[in-house]
Length: 444
Image 1 (tube, rainbow, N blue to C red):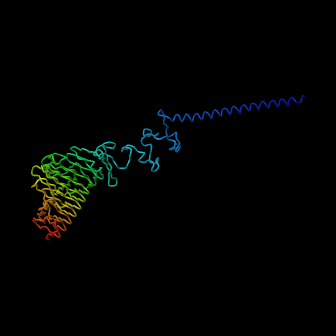
Image 2 (tube, rainbow, N blue to C red):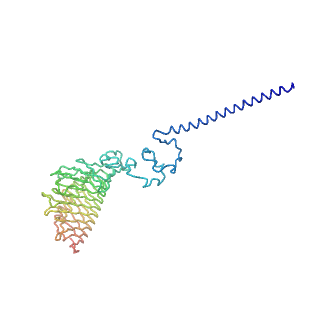
Image 3 (cartoon, rainbow, N blue to C red):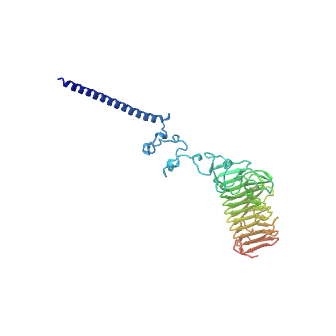
C-alpha cells in the first residue's frame, strides 16, 4: 500500500495537466473563431463603406469581370449612373453598342475626334463658325483641321467669316447657311465677302449668302479670295436679291489680286441684281479663276431699275496679263428679265482665258456675247473648244468681240445663229464650228 501512493499522485498530476491543456486548446479555438468573425465583419464593413448614400458601388468594390450582363436587370444602369469618361473604348467589345442601345442625340462633347470641331445650334462645341475658327491655333499643312457646320442659319452681320490656312469648313449642304451684309466700298474692289478665304483653306458642302443693301459705288460678294489660293467644293454662293436693291456690283464669288486664285469645283454661284450689275463670278486685278463642273448664273429681274447690266463671268482690271480664267465642263447662264441690258456671258479685260466642254446659255432678253480685250495687258490669249453657245429665243446669233491685240481661237463649237465677229487686232480664228441646225460655219 505504501508504494501505491506515489503512483496515484503521479496519475492525478497528469490528469490535471491534461485538463489544463484541453482548456487552453478550447480558449485558442474560441480566439480563432472570434478573429475569423471579426475578419468577416471587417470585409462586410468595407463593402458597406464603399456604398454611398445613393446606394451605388464604386469600382474598387467590384472585381473585374465579376458583374456580368445576366446580373443586371434591364435598364438598371442609366446615364445618371455613369460618370463622363468612365467608359472608354477598351471597356467595350466590338459591336457591343448597337443602334438599338442608343436613344436621343449624342452631343459633340461626348465624341472626341482629332482635329474636328462641331458647330451647331444645339449640342455642338460652338454655336458660331467664327468662334470655332478662332479656337484653332496650330493648323498646318501636316495638321489640318475640319470645322463641321451642322444645319442652321448662322448670321455674321456686317462681319466676314475669316477662314484660317490649312482648315476645311464643311456644312451639311444647303441646310447649313452662312449669311452676312458685308460690302466693299468702291466699284472695282472685292476684298471682303461673307466668307474670306485663306491660303490652302477649303470650303465645301455649304450655302453662303450676302444680302447687303449697301447702295451705289459698292461691291458685295458671298465668298472672297483676296490674294490667296484656296478651294471651294460643292458650295452654293448667292449674292443680292431679286426684289430688294442691294449694291452697284453683285457677285457670288470673287478672286482679287495677282496672288488670288479661286479653284471652284461643283459650285453654284449666283448674282441677283435688281439695281446693280449681276456677275456670277468675278476676277479683279490679275486674280485667277479655275472653274470645273460648276453652274454660274446671273439674274436680272423684270423689275430691274437703273442702267445696270451683267457679265456672268467677269474678269476685269487685268494689269500684267498673269490672270487666267479657265472654265471646264461647266454651265454659264444669263437670265435677263428686261430688254436692252448691256452684258456678256463672258467678259475678259486684260486676262487670258481657256474654255472647254462647257455650255453658255442666254435666257429671256440676254445676248450671246463674248468679249475679249487686252486692257492694260499685252497679247492676251483666249481659246474656246468643244463648247456650246445658245439662246432660248430664235433669231439670236453669237457675238464675238476681240479688241486690242488679244487673239482668240474658237474650234469645234456650236455657235447659235452663226457668228458676228467684231475684231480689232490679230483677230479671231474659227475652225470646224457649226450652228444649232448643224450648218458649218466657215473657217477663218
